Length: 330
Image (tube, rainbow, N blue to C red; front, side, top):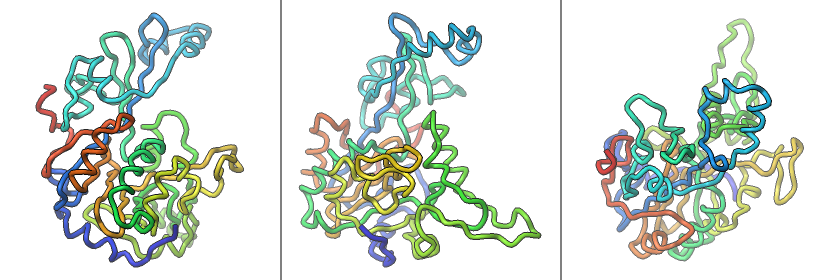
């Protein structure tokens, strides 16, 4: 893989997008494909043996010993949307929205919800399909293109620490730990730089993960989004360890099976865009979507939706995926 400075190879995407964010998905997903699939990002669920997961307020009221005992009993697992819908008595359908699936009352937090059986469900991560699931998706993608070894990947330029800039050095997205939502918020906060926070001091350049040539070079500009573009064979993402080999991997973390200098495994952001040179399909993991959209042939979409290890449903062109689009679970 290598940086692609000829960003016009992605101009066809811009021509098929709506110029502004609107009710349909086509502000980020190109029009004009035969079919579309929505791949639901997995959520997580916390349980305690034979009991109810306490709220944060309830945890805070415990003694130190009771707190340690309860926290040690937590069991965290991934769960799909169908399993979540079953727990809340709602319906998974192509245009389902997480806040409706978990029956979020007006004004309350949809990111963490307790089901009637006492488990605590945490919302899927936005803009990030787990590496292993992407590998399964990519297996189908490479089977439906004439150019599986020739294509492109676009990484959102706004991830904190990815690009260099003037101001304070930052690698927040690589070191943030704990709650994924908090890490995501930290990434976004670090994406904004103020080179003039001290009017009496000359602003200094600080490298990001990517070198200055790429940071200041040409990027793929789409409506509301900017991406660093790489020449990347789609077949590479069929390897679950793709994160260890991409050029936007943090060099201070591990590569392959080895840990990096901070004892971290390989870390790299999920591409927002992947497509083959023949443009037979495109994968879009929009940073604000809790699902990944694949646009392509009817055969590709049918194969993805039939794959047991991928939770996917077909969606129509013009599909609306905004937070209030779920008309079933009201």
